[in-house]
Image (tube, rainbow over all chains, first blue to last red; front, side, top):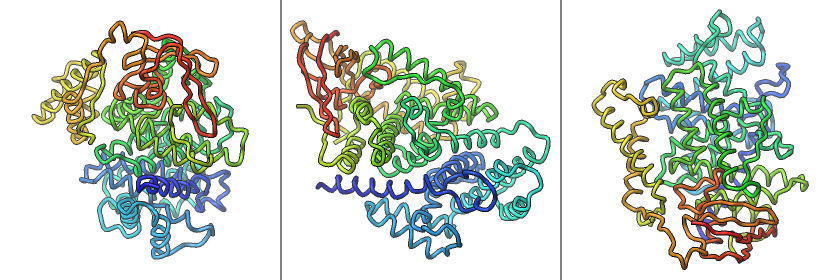
Amino acid sequence: MSKIEKETKNILNFLLQIEKLKKMKRTLWSGSGVKNPETFAEHSFRMSVMSWILAREAKEGLDFKKIIKISLVHDLPSVCFKKKSGKRNAAENKKAVKRLSRLLPPHLNKDICQSYLEYEKPASKEGKFVRQVDKIETFLQALEYLGNKPNAALEPLRKEIKESISSPHLLNFFSEIERKFFGNEKKSGNVDFFLEVGKMKKRIRESWAAKKIKIESAVADDSFMLAMAVWFFAPKRLNLEEMFKMALIYEICEAYIGEKSFLEKIFPGLFVKTSKEKLFKKEWRKKEAYVKKICRNCNNSLTNKIVNLWSKCKGRKTAEGNFVNQMYWAMTMLELLERWKNDKKIFLRSWTKEMIYYIDNVVVLGFLNEMYKKYLNGKNEFFEQ
Amino acid sequence: MEEQKKYYLTKEGVKKIREELENLLQLKKIKLKQEDISLLHSDELNAEFLSFHEDFDILESRIQELEHILHNFEIIKKSSKKEKNIVDLGAQVLVEVDGEDDEFMIVGTLEANPSEGRISNESPVGKALMGRKVGETILINCPAQIETTFKIKKIRY
């Protein structure tokens, strides 16, 4: 086995470990009467989006890439602890992250551990910022679950969070949330946007429904995993910060798609080229309109940024967009293979066929081959006969 | 190694890249001078500028990427009469895949988007079909012991 194959295999195993965050419910909501609460992955997803966008507007000279990394890894220790209750101390958490990432290639291992430490013992302004956003995201979620009526759990949380915020921009944002939920402010740019993004915690990907596949993980879970995979496989020459942002917003339009019923089939093998182009354009127009709808109360700069990122990824218009788009397909395959393990009725054939059309990046092809080796026994290199 | 990579592009593809580079260089100039964005008359450019406004690094790296491509590209040439029945870059290929017709164009990786019917010559399908003739049947190994059969029915340039 070559060094690259070994590294790819270890990354795959690491991804499968952190995949548990897609199923683990946040312990915070146990006992609060919330039915089917969010998972750790869903919380980390929206927190990453919030950290990036709030940092962008805070103008406090923050490093966005670092901010997203810290947000993505901040709940990693939970993977290692089966016991749901009880607070763990910092040393236990640190040890858990070290143990979890020990098989990763050295540069990634270091990156993960450092990013986690930034959260646990925030020495940098980025670490401090993310810690505050973590609390604000939780408060926003609490308001969504519990409403704004007097609640024994909400008021102490509100007070505690308010007292712990030091960033002026985050304090403003917190007031924005309060005005939205406790005041008369109906339209509230960023709060509205983050509430829309929060819908992805409940939405199931349209393509699963289209192919009648029962997969319970929400779009937010998948987007969290996509961002992680992009981090681990990113070619050095590409801009990781841009790819993180693409991975986080690529499926944002699913927040609305689930409400409509357009199960268009755009898969190759079913249509001649002209029909494919037509369907693609039709799908593009609809999805772009949804992305704009989600951003409708945001300022122009943010709306343009989000639409631009989405369009570059969906249309494979830049090297970064092309890579994230292909990684999205590979992660889709990983999700399917994980389900297929327990449900052999899932029809893999049409999906494996998609891959030979959609993927041409050597790194992503290598990742797929490792998946096939793991789940389908034996080496299955793509080759012609 | 990546530095020497050749990018295969259609004429339209090269035109698009040149136009994009021109626009981005204009945006960079405006950004560096900190001029008013109202100078940009086109709505499309304006949107692009707003998106790049805070991400100067992205603008820079995209400019570098486009310049790199324009230094290392090769236009997809029209095939000679003799080679017209052979699959090459730029070919519009009609194939029968497991009993169903499918049509797509083989292009370089930069212009590929299978959802729009443009398949990369570096993808497993693209690689397998390159250099093949009408009437040939090609088996592409997918995992799970699944083989997909491609029968080339027609090639157009």
